[in-house]
Image 1: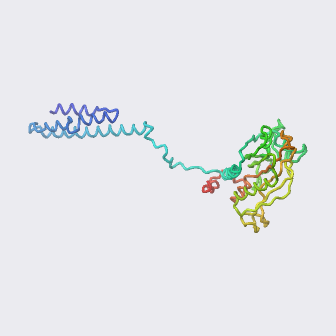
Image 2: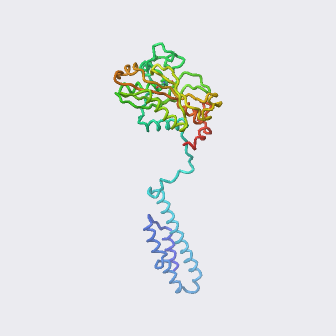
Image 3: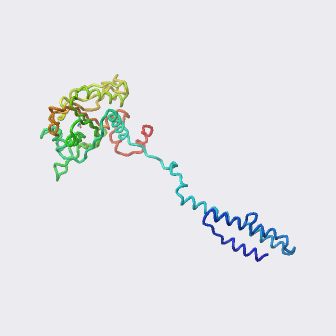
Amino acid sequence: MLDKINALLNEVENLQARDAGELEALRIKYISKNGAIPALMADFRSVPADQKKEVGMRINELKTRAFDKINSLRAQIESADNNSELHDLDITRTAYPISLGTRHPLTLVKNEIIDIFSRLGFSLAEGPEVEDDWHVFGAMNFAEDHPARDMQDTFFIESHPDVILRTHTSSVQSRVMETTQPPIRIICPGRVYRNEAISARAHCFFHQVEGLYIDKDVSFTDLKQVLLLFAREMFGDDTQIRLRPSYFPFTEPSAEMDISCHLCGGKGCSFCKGTGWVEILGCGMVDPNVLELNGIDSSVYKGYAFGMGVERITNLKYQVKDLRMFSENDKRFLQEFISAN
Ligand code: DAH
C-alpha cells in the first residue's frame, strides 16, 4: 500500500497539463470519485490495524498534494490564456489612469471658424509657411516699395532674399488662383510670421484665417451678409457688425469690420475702451489687378476676400489678456479650456 502511495505521490508531483482539456483528464484520473486516490481510500479498510496510522497520514498527504497540484496547474493555464489570447482583451476599456490632453484654445477657435464657413459652402485650402516674395506680396498687388516688404515686418533668409516666412495667409489666395479657375470658395487657416518684438500684445508668429470667394456675380452685399452670419454664429445672435472704410493693396474697396462688444453688449466697457465696438477682421472686394496677376479674367469674374486673426477672435471669446499665453504651453492655462473641448 505504502509503495502504491509513494508511486502516486511521485506521479502527482510531476503532472503537466497544456490546456484545460488535459487538466480535466488529470482531475478525473486522480481525484474524481472514480479516480486513483479515492480508490486508495476505499482500500484503506483492508490495511492492518498497526499500519493504519502511517498509511492514513500518507494518503492524506497524497490527497492534499494532488489537489494543490491540480489547482496550481489550473492557475497557470488561466493566466497563460489571459496573456496570449488577444480575443480575451477588452480593447475598448478606458486607458485609466492615463489623463487625456485638451485641445489648444486656438485650435478650438480655428475649428469653429472652419465649421461655420464650411456650412456656407467654403472648402479648405492650405499653402506653405515658407513662401516666396511673389505669392506673399507681388501677386497680392503690393507695390515694389510697399512698407510691408520692409525688413521690419518680414523675416527674410539672408542668403536667399526671395525666400520669406509668409506675413499673412493672403498668399494662399494666390496659390489657389494660379491653379484653379472660378468659382472659387475657400478658407485658408494657417500660421503667419512677422518681425515684431514679443510682448503681451504682439508676437512674432500668430494665426490667421483667410477667406476668398470668386464667381461671376459677387457683390459687396454678399460679403457683408456672410460676415454678419459669421459674427452671429461666433459671438451670438444679438451681435451687430459695422464696416469702416480701410485700405489693403489686394482689395478695392476695402473695409475693416467691427462687432458690437459682446462683453458689454455695445454699451461701452474697458474691454472695448468705451466705444461699444471691437475690430475683428479686414475685408473687401478683390482688386481686379489681383485677379489678373493670378490668371483670372477680371472682365468676367469678381470676388470678395477677408482675413482674420485667430488669436484676436480667441481673445474676444475667452478674454486672454496676454498673447504669450498661447505659446508657452502652461498646463494650467490649457486646462482652463477643458470644458470647451
Ligand atoms: N492680409 C491682411 C493682414 O494680414 C488681412 C486681410 C485683409 C486679408 C483684407 C484679406 C482682406 O483677404 O480682404 O492684415
